[in-house]
Amino acid sequence: MNELVASILLAEDDPVIARLLGQLLIDAGHHVVGTVGRSTDLIAALERDRPDVLLLDIGMETDTAGLDLAESDVIPEQTSIVFVSGRSDEATMQRVQRIAPAGFVVKPFTAQQVLAAVRVALGQARQPTPVTEDAARQLTLARDVLSKIAQELERVASLLSVGVQEERRLRELVELSTLSPREREVLRGLVNHKRPMSIAKDLYISHHTVRNHLKSIFTKLGVHSQAELLEKVLEPPS
Image 1 (cartoon, rainbow, N blue to C red):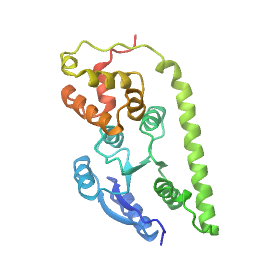
Image 2 (spheres, rainbow, N blue to C red):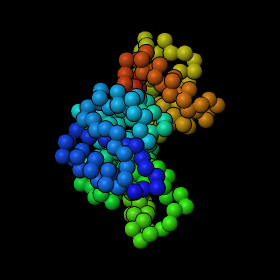
Image 3 (tube, rainbow, N blue to C red):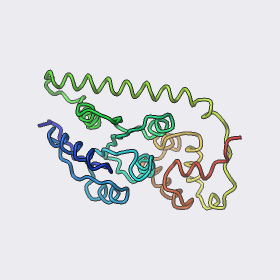
Image 4 (tube, helix red, strand yellow):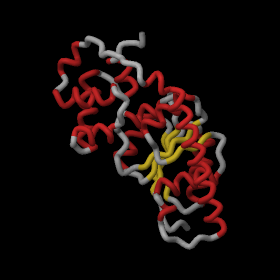
């Protein structure tokens, strides 16, 4: 049994993979509070169960449904996200970098990779626990996995650095006139490729307040994610 037992929610639309993930987590001593395969069910389950960790398949109804949900602020702050994905292309990794999940597991995965990601998500590596031979192997694996993810994200960031610096203007949308001054500041931060935590620091407000402003912006602009928002408000590259 793990010294840190996590309550884990599985969001995976492939029933075979869902059963495999659930069984290996239960065998490791964790508590699986549920398994969902649709976005609407996931939102309800998050509100009901408030899990410690969410194992979130990036591609459920669509190729990027998991990313869209993570960007829409429906996931509670206290829930750590571990993405499970069959995709590691540059566009996907760019969005993963912005979201900054606790872990990222690429299919096909091993049990050790999944458990290591959950361990890191819980901060178990920082706990003063006895280091058995098996624990040492898992910690080494966790470091290797995180190192590879960091290298991939750094590579993608360097490839995209030129495009990020390109100046893009806001479209002339009627909906933008309905934003409050503070909401405009939050939107300006997103347009400048800043993450919500960075925007909060710049504006001297809490991360929770930024999330509330984002929800209001999404409602006024009729969008459901940061990616959809930016696509709507930004002029296309020249």
